[in-house]
Image (cartoon, rainbow, N blue to C red; front, side):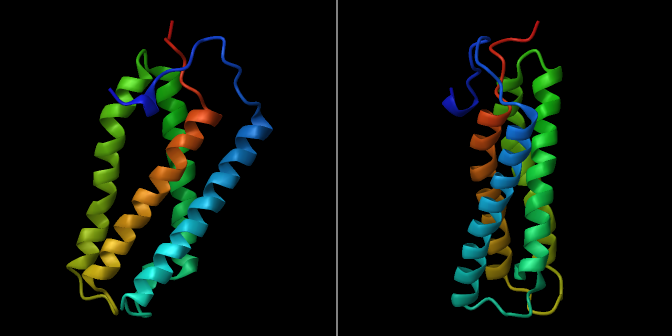
Length: 148
């Protein structure tokens, strides 16, 4: 169905620990940089500077946590599931939608500077992290063709 979750052949070599760690660091850095672009665009479009979630100190930390949590989940499913590609096809969209819930709740709050434009920017940031992290995880933590 979706090629991005297709398992690799069993003979595929897996990156070593330092490559994985460096790759995760690079993944987080790219995601933070792209989220900075989203924040700049949101501010240019009129989102208030008082909207704290679009401050670098807020979204950078959460972006890194998101990449690391995603890698942990990827590694867990990869190690435990007989059909990890099938699990990912189902659960990644569900988990991504669940990450929007706090943003929507924030949109209904009276926090200073909050606007739906800011909330949409946060949701776009979640999509950016997924778009950067999933291909990186496929390379750094390849899926086995099948689990025995």
